[in-house]
Image (cartoon, rainbow, N blue to C red; front, side, top):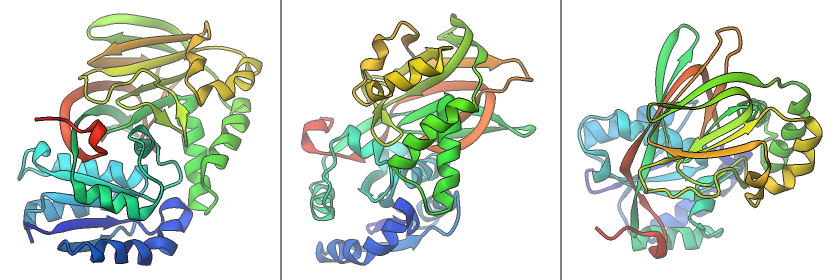
Length: 318
């Protein structure tokens, strides 16, 4: 099976859109003639287990994800948890069927499944950076890898509320926007100490914060407009404590990245970031739209660590 493509399918992706569209996607993949083995996720984090197992036991080095950003994130975590191959030796492609599809937006992924399959066949790849974060969950310390954006504070609250709606079949970009507004009446800014590459870059109250590799999250919000996915650096955006009025009147500016011109916004680049808060005021975390744990948080970039199939104009010449 080592020459087959492992196809990881999340039928729940896109508020069950994948369940409806999978027969059509399956037919398109079969028409290519490539050898493939399909596996279906049954629960949260199942893709991590499936990918790790098939790489280690069956020598899989080519993977297609049929799902959204969360399924892609779990697949990347499976690749990093396996010990058989270097992560760069495994080729990863995506057919986007999620609600946000923010990673695909970074690379101008085509909307039609037919064009996406054609792109997979062409096989142009980019070695993209990967983020690693150590965080707290209950009394334990845990680790997670991500290939898009980690959001904290208000961003993490909105993601959590949206994920709860997804579980009820009510997810999507509209749900994110609704929670973006309703969450304003629940969230309180948190005092943080932020160190980047060994130097303190911020001390004070933070409303929301993003650290990442790519530009978009939340179904098209350009939280990190200057991000370059293979430069070996995190982009960091900090929105300091501000008023509800300022947030509401600038929501539209999140979608084109122009919100960074607000005086409450600071931007940085770094390889490593450490974030601490007082124990009574935890800073919560999401990565690639998946709700995780809380501060203290330690981030580091792993440069050019995962091989992703993209359009030719984004590919890396090796």
